[in-house]
Length: 198
Ligand SMILES: Cc1cc2nc3c(=O)[nH]c(=O)nc-3n(C[C@H](O)[C@H](O)[C@H](O)COP(=O)(O)O)c2cc1C
View (cartoon, rainbow, N blue to C red):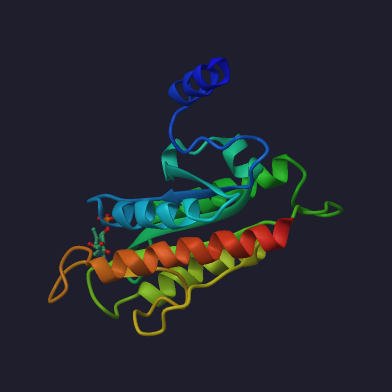
């Protein structure tokens, strides 16, 4: 009986999506003005959490702590498409990741970066008005920071560069198919990250 009481007490004291130090954590960071990219991020985090041994740390990009960047085995960044690219706020987050890694001496001349995975996801108002460019811009920055990039798998949903959703026009909001693609992406990302870092 006693161990059960102790476990419950720990669970009640721990905020959701807080990684334990012994489990590889995957940071799902996102920028979102009107909530679409946030919904996609939540679905991706659900997919990550479906993989035994992985834990998703879901955060708005401005809430991410430096320690969460350093301790994560993988980082996924989600952005709304703004003018056919990632949002300025998402770019600010990427700059911060680089700065944190440099300051921790995990990036830069003479340093040995820890193996980390990275991925991208986006939402855009139109089917084809920058979603690919936005994801590629995010992935290029992560590659430059020595991350190992992991893509998605759904060619039909345009998700091979990472999960995506069209949120306006003839396809408003997020459909169940787009959310399911995002869950599958989270699951794939977590499985591959575990294989990479273990
Ligand atoms: C300033 C601005 C620029 C945008 N530019 C594009 C664009 O170039 N292509 C596109 O598909 N959607 C564009 N959109 C629409 C957003 O990408 C879309 O509404 C997205 O789902 C918003 O995500 P959020 O709710 O997470 O902020 C733009 C929206 C804003 C506010």
